[in-house]
Length: 311
Ligand code: UD2
Image (cartoon, rainbow, N blue to C red; front, side, top):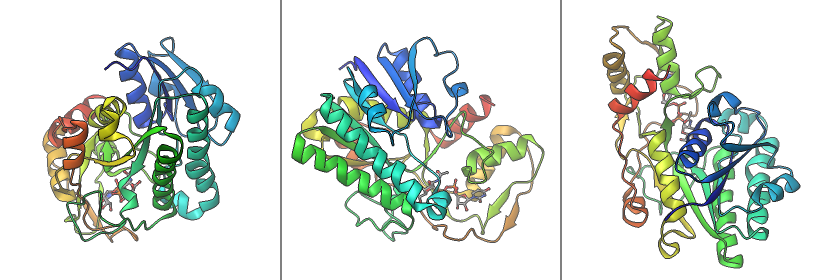
Protein backbone atom coordinates (compact mmCIF):
# COMPACT_ATOMS: atom_id res chain seq x y z
CA UNK A 1 0.00 0.00 0.00
CA UNK A 2 1.24 3.44 -0.91
CA UNK A 3 1.48 6.29 1.57
CA UNK A 4 0.00 9.31 -0.23
CA UNK A 5 0.96 11.97 2.27
CA UNK A 6 2.94 12.07 5.48
CA UNK A 7 4.10 14.41 8.21
CA UNK A 8 7.46 13.70 9.85
CA UNK A 9 7.95 15.60 13.10
CA UNK A 10 11.63 15.89 13.90
CA UNK A 11 12.16 15.42 10.17
CA UNK A 12 15.37 17.46 10.19
CA UNK A 13 16.93 15.19 12.81
CA UNK A 14 19.12 12.15 12.24
CA UNK A 15 16.43 9.45 11.91
CA UNK A 16 13.60 11.76 10.78
CA UNK A 17 15.56 13.11 7.82
CA UNK A 18 16.38 9.61 6.58
CA UNK A 19 12.67 8.77 6.82
CA UNK A 20 11.49 11.99 5.15
CA UNK A 21 13.93 11.58 2.25
CA UNK A 22 12.95 7.93 1.71
CA UNK A 23 9.25 8.85 1.70
CA UNK A 24 9.83 11.68 -0.78
CA UNK A 25 11.86 9.36 -3.02
CA UNK A 26 8.93 6.93 -3.04
CA UNK A 27 6.54 9.62 -4.24
CA UNK A 28 4.86 10.38 -0.91
CA UNK A 29 3.91 14.02 -0.36
CA UNK A 30 6.05 14.85 2.68
CA UNK A 31 5.90 17.64 5.23
CA UNK A 32 8.52 18.05 7.94
CA UNK A 33 7.84 19.84 11.22
CA UNK A 34 11.01 20.67 13.11
CA UNK A 35 12.12 23.43 15.47
CA UNK A 36 15.76 23.03 14.36
CA UNK A 37 16.99 22.87 17.95
CA UNK A 38 19.11 19.86 17.05
CA UNK A 39 17.92 19.04 13.53
CA UNK A 40 19.52 20.79 10.55
CA UNK A 41 18.59 21.71 6.97
CA UNK A 42 21.85 20.03 6.03
CA UNK A 43 20.22 16.67 6.88
CA UNK A 44 17.59 17.34 4.18
CA UNK A 45 20.02 18.60 1.57
CA UNK A 46 18.90 17.97 -2.01
CA UNK A 47 15.27 17.57 -0.93
CA UNK A 48 14.43 21.18 -0.10
CA UNK A 49 12.18 21.50 -3.13
CA UNK A 50 10.54 18.10 -2.74
CA UNK A 51 9.70 18.35 0.96
CA UNK A 52 7.47 20.95 2.61
CA UNK A 53 9.72 22.06 5.46
CA UNK A 54 7.90 23.86 8.27
CA UNK A 55 9.76 25.41 11.19
CA UNK A 56 7.65 24.91 14.29
CA UNK A 57 7.57 23.38 17.73
CA UNK A 58 5.51 20.43 18.93
CA UNK A 59 4.90 22.32 22.19
CA UNK A 60 2.75 24.69 20.11
CA UNK A 61 -0.70 23.10 19.61
CA UNK A 62 -1.52 25.36 16.66
CA UNK A 63 1.70 24.42 14.85
CA UNK A 64 0.79 20.74 15.34
CA UNK A 65 -2.73 21.31 14.06
CA UNK A 66 -1.57 23.12 10.94
CA UNK A 67 1.10 20.53 10.23
CA UNK A 68 -1.43 17.65 10.34
CA UNK A 69 -3.79 19.25 7.83
CA UNK A 70 -4.37 17.00 4.81
CA UNK A 71 -1.99 14.32 6.06
CA UNK A 72 -2.63 10.56 5.91
CA UNK A 73 0.18 9.32 8.18
CA UNK A 74 2.03 11.05 11.01
CA UNK A 75 5.48 9.85 12.00
CA UNK A 76 6.19 11.48 15.35
CA UNK A 77 9.95 11.62 15.95
CA UNK A 78 10.34 15.12 17.38
CA UNK A 79 11.75 14.76 20.87
CA UNK A 80 14.42 15.84 23.27
CA UNK A 81 16.48 12.69 22.91
CA UNK A 82 19.32 13.19 25.35
CA UNK A 83 19.06 11.08 28.49
CA UNK A 84 21.47 13.34 30.47
CA UNK A 85 19.52 16.48 29.49
CA UNK A 86 16.30 14.80 30.58
CA UNK A 87 17.92 14.27 33.98
CA UNK A 88 19.22 17.85 34.24
CA UNK A 89 15.98 19.43 33.07
CA UNK A 90 13.12 16.95 33.37
CA UNK A 91 10.46 19.65 33.11
CA UNK A 92 11.65 20.91 29.76
CA UNK A 93 12.12 17.34 28.49
CA UNK A 94 8.62 16.49 29.74
CA UNK A 95 7.07 19.43 27.90
CA UNK A 96 8.60 18.29 24.62
CA UNK A 97 8.41 14.52 25.01
CA UNK A 98 5.02 14.17 26.70
CA UNK A 99 3.37 17.54 26.01
CA UNK A 100 4.53 17.52 22.39
CA UNK A 101 3.31 13.96 21.87
CA UNK A 102 -0.11 14.83 23.33
CA UNK A 103 -0.35 17.89 21.10
CA UNK A 104 0.44 15.74 18.09
CA UNK A 105 -2.05 13.02 19.03
CA UNK A 106 -4.81 15.60 19.49
CA UNK A 107 -3.94 17.32 16.21
CA UNK A 108 -3.83 13.99 14.34
CA UNK A 109 -7.19 12.95 15.77
CA UNK A 110 -8.85 16.27 14.96
CA UNK A 111 -7.43 16.44 11.43
CA UNK A 112 -8.58 12.92 10.54
CA UNK A 113 -5.12 11.38 10.25
CA UNK A 114 -5.31 7.64 9.45
CA UNK A 115 -2.30 6.39 11.32
CA UNK A 116 0.15 7.71 13.89
CA UNK A 117 3.58 6.07 14.23
CA UNK A 118 5.32 6.99 17.48
CA UNK A 119 9.09 6.71 17.94
CA UNK A 120 9.73 5.22 21.36
CA UNK A 121 12.91 3.81 22.83
CA UNK A 122 14.51 0.81 24.50
CA UNK A 123 15.02 3.28 27.35
CA UNK A 124 11.55 2.29 28.59
CA UNK A 125 12.97 -1.08 29.74
CA UNK A 126 15.75 0.26 31.96
CA UNK A 127 18.20 -2.36 33.16
CA UNK A 128 16.27 -5.59 32.64
CA UNK A 129 17.71 -9.04 33.28
CA UNK A 130 15.57 -10.53 30.51
CA UNK A 131 17.68 -10.46 27.35
CA UNK A 132 16.76 -10.62 24.54
CA UNK A 133 13.99 -8.39 25.80
CA UNK A 134 10.48 -8.88 24.46
CA UNK A 135 7.77 -6.24 24.59
CA UNK A 136 5.85 -7.77 27.50
CA UNK A 137 8.79 -7.39 29.88
CA UNK A 138 7.69 -4.94 32.57
CA UNK A 139 9.11 -1.51 31.70
CA UNK A 140 11.22 0.08 34.39
CA UNK A 141 12.68 3.28 32.96
CA UNK A 142 15.79 4.62 34.69
CA UNK A 143 15.60 8.17 33.36
CA UNK A 144 12.99 10.89 32.79
CA UNK A 145 13.54 10.27 29.07
CA UNK A 146 12.46 6.63 29.46
CA UNK A 147 9.48 7.64 31.61
CA UNK A 148 8.43 10.15 28.95
CA UNK A 149 8.68 7.68 26.06
CA UNK A 150 6.65 5.15 28.06
CA UNK A 151 4.01 7.79 28.79
CA UNK A 152 3.90 8.64 25.07
CA UNK A 153 3.23 4.99 24.25
CA UNK A 154 0.38 4.86 26.75
CA UNK A 155 -1.14 8.10 25.47
CA UNK A 156 -0.97 6.73 21.93
CA UNK A 157 -2.82 3.60 23.09
CA UNK A 158 -5.41 5.81 24.83
CA UNK A 159 -6.07 7.55 21.53
CA UNK A 160 -6.53 4.19 19.82
CA UNK A 161 -8.87 2.86 22.48
CA UNK A 162 -10.89 6.01 23.13
CA UNK A 163 -10.94 7.76 19.74
CA UNK A 164 -10.09 5.03 17.23
CA UNK A 165 -6.93 6.75 15.99
CA UNK A 166 -4.64 3.97 14.68
CA UNK A 167 -1.34 4.23 16.55
CA UNK A 168 1.84 2.15 16.50
CA UNK A 169 4.80 2.61 18.86
CA UNK A 170 8.31 1.54 17.86
CA UNK A 171 10.94 0.98 20.55
CA UNK A 172 14.28 1.66 18.89
CA UNK A 173 17.45 0.12 20.25
CA UNK A 174 20.85 1.73 19.44
CA UNK A 175 20.32 3.38 16.06
CA UNK A 176 23.31 4.39 13.93
CA UNK A 177 24.04 5.41 10.36
CA UNK A 178 25.16 8.24 8.08
CA UNK A 179 24.91 11.83 9.34
CA UNK A 180 24.59 10.98 13.03
CA UNK A 181 26.11 13.84 14.99
CA UNK A 182 29.49 12.88 16.53
CA UNK A 183 30.10 16.19 18.27
CA UNK A 184 27.69 16.50 21.16
CA UNK A 185 29.01 15.37 24.54
CA UNK A 186 26.12 12.88 24.50
CA UNK A 187 26.88 11.56 21.02
CA UNK A 188 26.32 7.87 20.34
CA UNK A 189 29.25 5.51 20.45
CA UNK A 190 29.53 4.71 16.71
CA UNK A 191 29.89 8.28 15.40
CA UNK A 192 32.25 9.01 18.31
CA UNK A 193 34.46 6.05 17.40
CA UNK A 194 34.47 6.97 13.69
CA UNK A 195 35.40 10.59 14.26
CA UNK A 196 38.15 9.56 16.69
CA UNK A 197 39.67 7.29 14.04
CA UNK A 198 39.40 9.99 11.36
CA UNK A 199 41.24 12.40 13.66
CA UNK A 200 43.86 9.74 14.37
CA UNK A 201 42.90 9.72 18.04
CA UNK A 202 42.40 6.76 20.28
CA UNK A 203 38.73 6.30 21.18
CA UNK A 204 37.60 5.81 24.74
CA UNK A 205 35.85 2.64 25.79
CA UNK A 206 33.98 3.07 29.06
CA UNK A 207 34.46 -0.03 31.19
CA UNK A 208 35.98 -3.30 29.97
CA UNK A 209 34.25 -3.17 26.58
CA UNK A 210 32.40 -6.42 27.24
CA UNK A 211 29.04 -4.65 27.61
CA UNK A 212 26.66 -5.45 24.76
CA UNK A 213 24.30 -3.43 22.57
CA UNK A 214 21.86 -4.27 19.79
CA UNK A 215 22.86 -1.83 17.04
CA UNK A 216 20.27 -1.01 14.41
CA UNK A 217 21.06 0.55 11.04
CA UNK A 218 18.98 3.66 10.34
CA UNK A 219 17.79 2.25 6.99
CA UNK A 220 16.18 -0.62 8.89
CA UNK A 221 14.51 1.86 11.24
CA UNK A 222 13.11 3.69 8.21
CA UNK A 223 11.71 0.45 6.79
CA UNK A 224 10.19 -0.38 10.17
CA UNK A 225 8.37 2.96 10.10
CA UNK A 226 7.02 2.33 6.59
CA UNK A 227 5.81 -1.12 7.68
CA UNK A 228 4.21 0.31 10.82
CA UNK A 229 2.37 2.83 8.64
CA UNK A 230 1.05 0.26 6.18
CA UNK A 231 0.56 -2.99 8.13
CA UNK A 232 -3.07 -4.08 8.54
CA UNK A 233 -4.61 -2.22 11.45
CA UNK A 234 -5.70 -5.44 13.20
CA UNK A 235 -2.05 -6.45 13.41
CA UNK A 236 -0.41 -3.13 14.18
CA UNK A 237 -2.82 -0.67 15.74
CA UNK A 238 -2.39 -0.09 19.45
CA UNK A 239 0.80 -2.14 19.40
CA UNK A 240 4.36 -1.61 20.64
CA UNK A 241 7.24 -3.20 18.75
CA UNK A 242 10.97 -3.55 19.37
CA UNK A 243 13.00 -2.34 16.41
CA UNK A 244 16.63 -3.45 16.45
CA UNK A 245 19.25 -5.42 14.61
CA UNK A 246 18.29 -8.46 16.66
CA UNK A 247 21.93 -9.30 17.52
CA UNK A 248 24.07 -8.32 20.47
CA UNK A 249 27.62 -7.13 19.97
CA UNK A 250 30.17 -6.20 22.59
CA UNK A 251 31.82 -2.80 22.36
CA UNK A 252 35.14 -4.58 21.85
CA UNK A 253 33.72 -6.42 18.82
CA UNK A 254 32.25 -3.20 17.48
CA UNK A 255 35.66 -1.57 17.77
CA UNK A 256 37.37 -4.49 15.97
CA UNK A 257 34.83 -4.40 13.14
CA UNK A 258 35.21 -0.67 12.73
CA UNK A 259 38.99 -0.98 12.57
CA UNK A 260 38.72 -3.56 9.81
CA UNK A 261 36.20 -1.44 7.86
CA UNK A 262 38.42 1.64 8.20
CA UNK A 263 41.72 -0.20 7.75
CA UNK A 264 43.29 1.13 10.95
CA UNK A 265 45.21 -0.37 13.87
CA UNK A 266 44.62 1.91 16.85
CA UNK A 267 44.50 1.02 20.52
CA UNK A 268 41.43 2.16 22.41
CA UNK A 269 41.78 3.82 25.79
CA UNK A 270 39.84 2.08 28.53
CA UNK A 271 38.24 4.37 31.11
CA UNK A 272 35.95 3.92 34.09
CA UNK A 273 32.45 2.70 33.23
CA UNK A 274 30.01 5.53 32.59
CA UNK A 275 27.68 6.08 35.54
CA UNK A 276 24.15 4.91 34.90
CA UNK A 277 25.16 2.73 31.95
CA UNK A 278 23.40 -0.55 31.54
CA UNK A 279 25.57 -3.62 31.00
CA UNK A 280 23.62 -5.58 28.43
CA UNK A 281 20.93 -4.68 25.95
CA UNK A 282 19.40 -6.84 23.25
CA UNK A 283 16.02 -7.02 21.58
CA UNK A 284 13.66 -9.85 20.82
CA UNK A 285 12.27 -8.64 17.49
CA UNK A 286 9.95 -11.57 16.79
CA UNK A 287 6.80 -9.49 17.30
CA UNK A 288 7.83 -6.95 14.67
CA UNK A 289 8.84 -9.83 12.39
CA UNK A 290 5.55 -11.66 12.63
CA UNK A 291 3.10 -8.74 12.76
CA UNK A 292 4.83 -6.02 10.71
CA UNK A 293 6.96 -8.21 8.43
CA UNK A 294 10.10 -6.45 9.73
CA UNK A 295 13.47 -8.07 9.11
CA UNK A 296 16.69 -6.18 9.65
CA UNK A 297 18.50 -6.17 6.30
CA UNK A 298 21.81 -4.55 7.20
CA UNK A 299 24.48 -6.36 9.19
CA UNK A 300 26.61 -4.32 11.59
CA UNK A 301 29.62 -4.67 9.30
CA UNK A 302 27.71 -3.50 6.23
CA UNK A 303 26.06 -0.68 8.19
CA UNK A 304 29.43 0.51 9.49
CA UNK A 305 30.77 0.54 5.92
CA UNK A 306 27.81 2.63 4.71
CA UNK A 307 28.22 4.98 7.67
CA UNK A 308 31.96 5.48 7.16
CA UNK A 309 31.49 6.03 3.40
CA UNK A 310 29.17 8.96 4.09
CA UNK A 311 31.81 10.89 6.06
C1 UD2 B 1 21.15 4.37 24.24
C2 UD2 B 1 20.52 5.65 23.71
C3 UD2 B 1 19.79 6.35 24.81
C4 UD2 B 1 18.83 5.45 25.54
C5 UD2 B 1 19.57 4.21 26.01
C6 UD2 B 1 18.59 3.23 26.62
C7 UD2 B 1 21.96 6.54 21.93
C8 UD2 B 1 22.97 7.58 21.58
N1 UD2 B 1 21.54 6.55 23.21
O1 UD2 B 1 22.17 4.71 25.15
O2 UD2 B 1 19.06 7.43 24.26
O3 UD2 B 1 17.78 5.10 24.67
O4 UD2 B 1 20.20 3.56 24.91
O5 UD2 B 1 19.26 2.13 27.12
O6 UD2 B 1 21.51 5.75 21.10
N2 UD2 B 1 30.62 4.13 24.96
C9 UD2 B 1 32.01 4.06 24.95
N3 UD2 B 1 32.71 5.11 24.48
C10 UD2 B 1 32.13 6.25 24.02
C11 UD2 B 1 30.71 6.33 24.03
C12 UD2 B 1 29.99 5.25 24.52
O7 UD2 B 1 32.57 3.06 25.37
O8 UD2 B 1 32.84 7.17 23.61
C13 UD2 B 1 29.84 2.98 25.42
C14 UD2 B 1 28.87 3.32 26.52
O9 UD2 B 1 29.48 3.25 27.77
C15 UD2 B 1 27.82 2.21 26.31
C16 UD2 B 1 27.86 1.96 24.80
O10 UD2 B 1 29.07 2.50 24.34
O11 UD2 B 1 28.18 1.05 26.98
C17 UD2 B 1 26.73 2.64 24.04
O12 UD2 B 1 26.68 4.01 24.41
P1 UD2 B 1 25.72 5.06 23.67
O13 UD2 B 1 25.87 6.35 24.38
O14 UD2 B 1 25.97 5.03 22.20
O15 UD2 B 1 24.25 4.46 23.85
P2 UD2 B 1 23.51 3.88 25.18
O16 UD2 B 1 23.26 2.43 24.93
O17 UD2 B 1 24.20 4.26 26.41
